[in-house]
Amino acid sequence: MSMKAETEEKLTKPMAADTAADKKDVKWTPAQLEAITLKGTDILVGAAAGSGKTASLTERIVSSIVSGGADVSRILAVTFTKAAAAELKSRISNALRRAAAGNPGNRRIARQLSLLPGASIGTIHSFCLTLLRSHYAELGIPPDIRVADEAEASLLRRECMEETIDAFYNGDLTIKSTNLDF
Image (cartoon, rainbow, N blue to C red; front, side):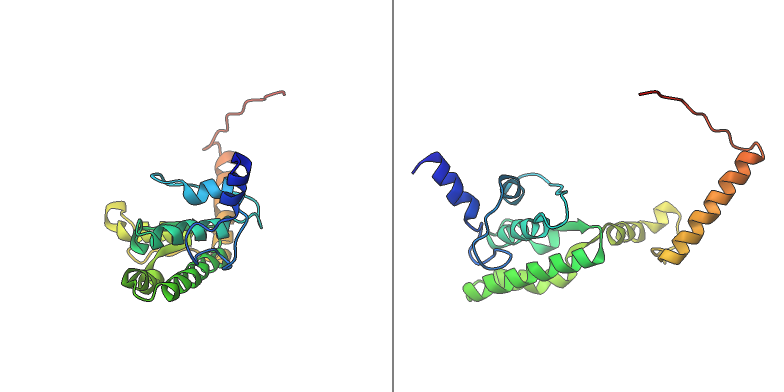
């Protein structure tokens, strides 16, 4: 088999049996394949909407779980929106269900599926909030800290802006600037 044919076969083959995001052969790009198969390191996947980030990340996570290389409790997957986090968790759940159905005697996959609701798959806000709540005493913050809703955040931004402008006009704040010509 030629190198090109071998590469084409590798790019279309799902990484783990019955785990591809939509249960059919997916034609992965070289970058997606790297994101799926890279081992021994954490990864950051950033790309445009509709580029296959969720499918690639689902495949990476499920392949690692099914192969026995990862436990759901040891995975951190962070997204920017609640919808993206819910979609990722749903796809992982569906893929693990297919893997469990295809391997009925594999208790490990069934256990990982049962642990999925408690997995650290969520937004950057929820991850940071968990960290803050875990270490509130050392940080000197209240234990019931929460993420501000959009109305509160807007009000806080406005208050900070007004305080900064007032401080500047009162001479309590100086702004150093550098003019750069390109």
